[in-house]
Length: 70
Image (cartoon, rainbow, N blue to C red; front, side, top):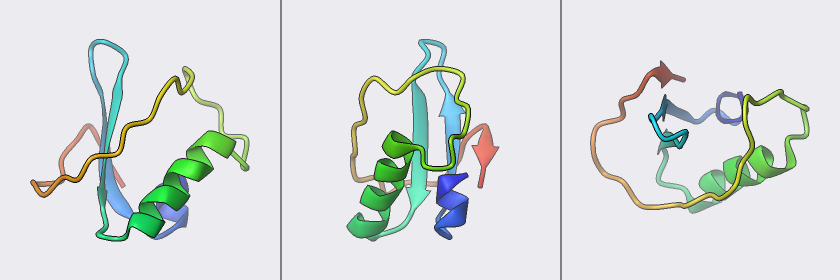
């Protein structure tokens, strides 16, 4: 929801261990950080089915794929 609102495309997948992997199609560190900050602050009070324990940001240059495309 927050990525779409910011005009960022990508994909998300839920892994068996409960981790969620999100791939963002952006080269902008600023867009990535804005997305992460929105997830942390949750200003739209979106109901998540878990909680965010940690966030790791890594550069990725592969194909964007996942269970949920946005």
